[in-house]
Amino acid sequence: MTSTTDPTLADTQADVAQALIRGLVEGDVAGVKALFAGPADIDDPAAGRQIDGGFDRLVREWAPAHITRVTSVELAHHTAGKDGRFSATEFHLVLDKDGQDKDLDIVVVSEFGEDGGLVRNRLYYRLARVTGVQHQRTRILGEEPIHLAPFNPVLDQYQKALRQGDPDGQADTFSEDGVFNGHGESQDLRDGLGMGVYEGRDAIRAVLRQMFDIGDEEAGHQGEEHAGAHIEKLNVIDDGVTTVLEFNIVHENHPLNRTSAGVAAYELGEDGLLKEARVYDEAW
Image 1 (cartoon, rainbow, N blue to C red):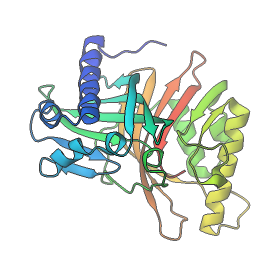
Image 2: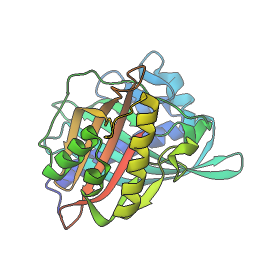
Image 3: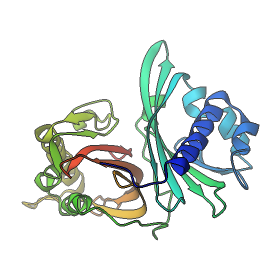
Image 4: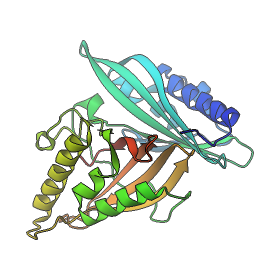
């Protein structure tokens, strides 16, 4: 399948995201600030949202480069929205943590102004990969969507099944050899280390069933059907092949009505089904 986004625009926005990550790794405050058209604005899992005031410290002590040592950075995927307002750039980092290699996958969601200048960034990654402690990221965007592009029917089916607590319906949106990558460190969700990588529709179906089972247990749900999860769609970035969705998961059946911020990239295959779902939230 072919992207319908202007390739020159996509390249320019990807270059900005690469310069941002490079600046964070190097602790280059001036270099990162220079990327922004106005006040520097970054929302980070460890530091929270920083605009100018606490921004210098965020850059100098960015958690992946401050707690560990970044040994390599690779641009893995880039999705530029058709109207030029938003892009999402996925990176694969290798960290040296106490002499051991750790993988860290990061999404940089970039927001651009009408003149094409960088306005704001939101970073998503599993902080537990850096600190070793499971992290729960609460709401970072409001309840009202900031940008919604048309949603692919397959993704509508995926989201509907998630809302209804239907793991079979979700799994059926994947190609037979599809991949679900939750960027966690375990195949078994009961280990509490996040959803790992699941290859093939049957493996995806099995972990989704486990996810709903655990959710029902937490909620004290005793019904015959799974309780499901409510997804607030807040920002959709689409290039014709990949759809990136920023969202909140509202755990309506959780005792504390927990809300979790996240982002996911859904890439379609030639068969029109999901070739890969790359999910960057810390709820599981």
